[in-house]
Length: 64
Image (cartoon, rainbow, N blue to C red; front, side, top):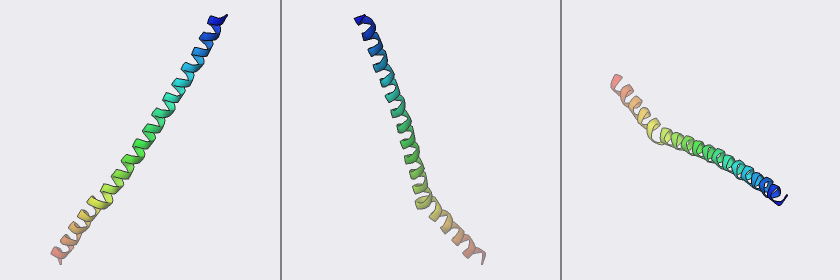
């Protein structure tokens, strides 16, 4: 009887730990995706966009 109670208790704890692990993995993936998107936008607007803009300016000046 005590063994059965211990087994069910252990099963509940294992399920809870598995659930917490899944939640933590999900949130870490979401956070990583958000950080990567922020970095992508940062690099796009800070580095790529001014470079292309200056290149376009240079081309329009050369074509005139």
